[in-house]
Image 1 (cartoon, rainbow, N blue to C red):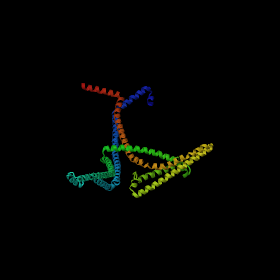
Image 2 (image 1 turned 135 degrees about the vertical axis):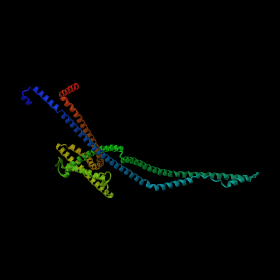
Image 3 (image 1 turned 90 degrees about the vertical axis):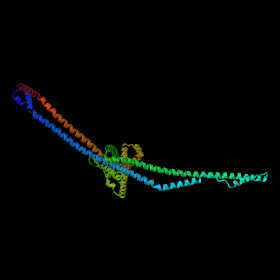
Image 4 (image 1 turned 30 degrees about the vertical axis):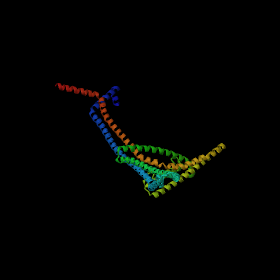
Length: 470
């Protein structure tokens, strides 16, 4: 504009002149500009496309790696579950079926006793006496009016009635005896029934365990084959375990904060003073945090020694005798820290009572201080109980911590794969935008210089018409 002003031109004329010059320059450089725009858009599009392919290649390798890690973790978990089920079946067999020979012998004895009682209770009809035939022979003797024969027959009749009565009495006694034997068979039957019910319960338990093992074996086979269903199941399970363990660890962090508040103040009596050392934390606070971390570390290694967790395989691979000794040592250490915390809880209550007594003395409120002292034993006992229990509660943080560590790998892999897919999509989107943006810039460029292009088109049309007329 300064050059045009030096020429003494009107500003409007100067602007129009600049527009005309710009359009002419753009018209003259139209072909190189088009090639530059097209080349730039193609370069950006191809670069974005190649970058997206590289990202997708990384995503594919990461997805395969995550699949392998997921299947390996699932296979390890299923192997642990199957091993545990076999241990339970082995314990059941050793506990229940190991007594089967004695049970079989007892069952045979009971069945033999029942068989003997049954044989003894069989009713055998009594044989008719031998003198009945003699009576029949005497009865057939003709009396012929002889009174002696009648008297003999009458005596025989009375003897027969008496014998019949005695036989009936003996029969009743024998029946009563048989009923007693049948009654004595009932405890044997009940004992046999109890033995059979016990055997049935043991066998049913083993069958239930075998069905559980079959279900785990089916899942284990799917994991070994690497089916998509197994991968989806393991992914959902890992996400569930991740958020569940995270929630439990948040609760554990809250418990640790309560424990920290419980022992931080009386810890100043042990370490001496409340001097600030690091990031504004006082010495007693640092000591309290270290004590809580030591308790959690002891709990983790105690769980490792008991083979409940497997964060450190070298601990589980130790000799059983040495491992049990280490577990007892860790438990004694944890118990000692719990007792120390109970003492700190008692000390905290003493310090609070001293502060309250000092405040009441300064206010002159002796009655309130006496009332507080009368119920202070409840607070003291509660703080001591919390100080003793919370270390053992924090010991179980090892279980959700192991689950969190194992599931975090899978969750992190899933998040990384999702991020790479989104990043690849963004690169493709940017490449597509630059591709169509180049075409749009060509049209915008031609729109700016449409007047010279229109004149050029008219000139070419006129020239073509002249050549056709000639």
